Image (cartoon, rainbow, N blue to C red):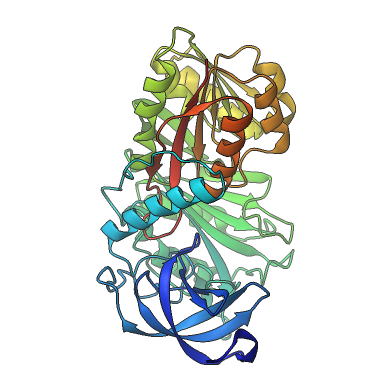
Length: 454
């Protein structure tokens, strides 16, 4: 039998897929090395081509499926095998739910060393057409034509597209005509994030319940002649478009949005209903991409925090008040901490719009200020970025642990790491963890973890 060291790049060999990786790749073993194969499913016997050999694992491309899984299906999108936006379109929806639940269970056990019940995942009623926001890279092709699409997996090469089935149909339908209009302008387009190049991204956002749409162009500069005329034309052509904006990102960076957003026509925000509240959502602020699934989290939080007589809830990373405001509407006193000044401004305006006097928001660095604010709150809600709780935030919680802690996470591995410390070092009891499928057709999964202590 060939050994890993005997394999050459490009060599073809067979493999049995035993599991699923956190990025949605099939996982098998060749001798003592783990092999990651995008597009392969657990239980399949596949033919693969070696693409990369690292010290402790191999990466291979799928050549063929000798023995397909009963969960394999034809991908809903014709670009699925090339585009890096989705990693599980070839897997049946019910099987995706089982695989994601298992990913959460494995992370809790292996990373957090936790033996805790993982509840059945909240599957999405709409596994396609659910994304309320798109950030679509732009480039010029070899012949100078405008191309828009997501990057090929593991590269910065755009897979040109005119439609995307995971996007809300109301913004999906705008991609092709907007591409045609941008092509006609002949505005410069940035190349590989080389600062000063011109257009970089097309950003679209829709209110799931309201139907209002924002169009935002991301450019390294504002030298786009005729933009205002074109923006007004778009608003006349599509009545659902309530605003057109220009975001300036002058830095050669993978960070999509820059610090400045200019209102070109209409509004800089759209109105949306969320969990009974009316929210303003701007083009450059964070909001959960799956509105319907995010709304299913609210009753879990409300019930948990309402079980005790203490009404004070501190929310770290509160954004525009997505979860703070429904909690305040339920009768809790909420203080939200958020670093992004635009989000804080919107959160305050949203509280005023909904007449929620029990919701307050402060612009603050969570890592630097959490310790002083924990003296006010009996309960804490955290919804951190994928990297999880920073050492400073973790230390603040361990030094003064609130009686109740709700942790919303988009990364099972960092969630498991943090829950392991919270339970072992702060004496928290962890309730069964609830996965929620915010991102069908991908391997990403949201989780809600509820912790309490005496």
